[in-house]
Length: 348
Image 1 (cartoon, rainbow, N blue to C red):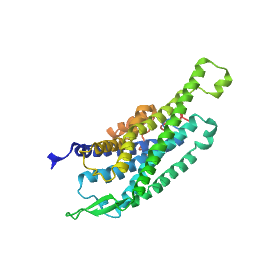
Image 2: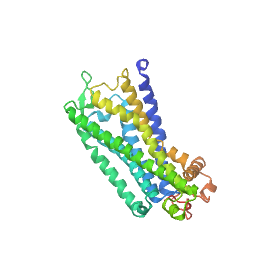
Image 3: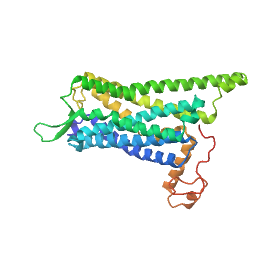
Image 4: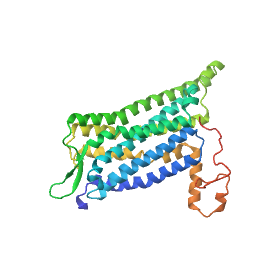
């Protein structure tokens, strides 16, 4: 059977376990670091980092482990039978929607903090951020409820096994409406918001730096303040997270629209059709976005790298007392008299 296995199936059997292995621990580690350390970021920014780690972990558990890995390594996953067949997509799309819209809300929050400074004190607070985060999680799962009626559990002829498939009794209008609603919710609207706000932020940076360099009068300088080094770090974090999301998700966005509107009856495991190969590659790229945020933070944030190094040192030398007594206490200590991250150049 292995000789007849398509290379795409083999690739997925290797890729998804690897993604879970590098993604879930890195998300948990990121959550713990931002939970205990400020890492030079504002409280609202840290709340979004923690929330994104939780949402990405939910995506990896619901979609990568419970759906894709089980699908590739078992003949009849538990979600092949009712009611799990219907509940599966509600939980999967709820987690995915949360992950996407937390990126969008983080982009909006950073835009307000960087560009509209007069609103920062009212909107970019920890309390306001927590309200937004809870609203995102709740609404994301509410918007995924229509998927409960999109699938059905059917018996495969001659085998007695069950399979979770698209519900053949649903009208084409229902299917296309659901597809366009979901793609608008997690791709079209997020893309428009992210590109627009990132463009405005970068435009202001260029404009303010130009005025600063030309040595305009003090009134102009107050109107367009020069972007300081610690604020540049916030901009780099914003652009890196949001544009990485756009880059990795575009292929899935295009292929899902093609499959679910033009090839709704297609056998998804028939890799002789190029659209199935493109769709599964797009899915792999898309889900990669939920596993790499820690590595993006490490590449762009020096304070985060220092915290990560301390954790790695402790894990590599768990019995060393000099690490425990260092000036920067490790993250897994239950209590400490000295704070790890002193609030120097905190990003607003």
